Image (cartoon, rainbow, N blue to C red; front, top):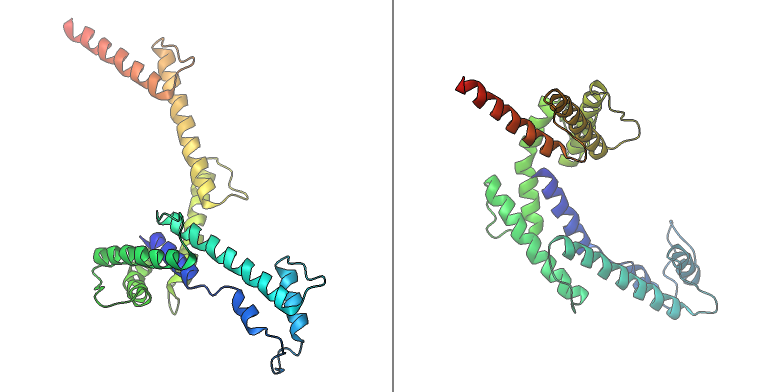
Length: 246
């Protein structure tokens, strides 16, 4: 639940992102009034921005540079929207950025309302932004409860800060568990450690099953652990039935 809410927040952030064209929009033919932060002429500002985004400025006017930056911005923004739409299962075929934005906002609202219903939060008359705020408030006690179990302090911390510390605490516990199981953790993420622990557990299970099979004279060559285990069960069942008949 907590991870899903974070994911919806990220999708919402993409929808609300202001494209870099906003910079280009402000860069007109004449330089803006100098500020304490920057006194660079418009041409230099545009060239700096173009360099950041890999746009060539050789022999181009301010208007040409600005147009290319706007086009690049629009393309990047549309790409972000398409990725967000894909995560929500929304078709992007033939849709403009504005249409995608509307569809994403609608889909996010549906999901937010579903989360709100599960948490007992009223969604009536609330915007996506207001609903996120209400959900954050509802989730906070759950985060605090989870943090208390792991010995993580939550005083004065935001949901995001608590999540970060919970992840760190969970990683430490995973590392301890892995160490006891003889699994290396150096340089591994929590996901990688879980995968390694699962693999280790499966290896130990396979080893135990193979030993049992050997005692019963069952071949394990070319067979999965599940197949060998099924044969062991069958052999044991037959053995018990034979004993019961005596």
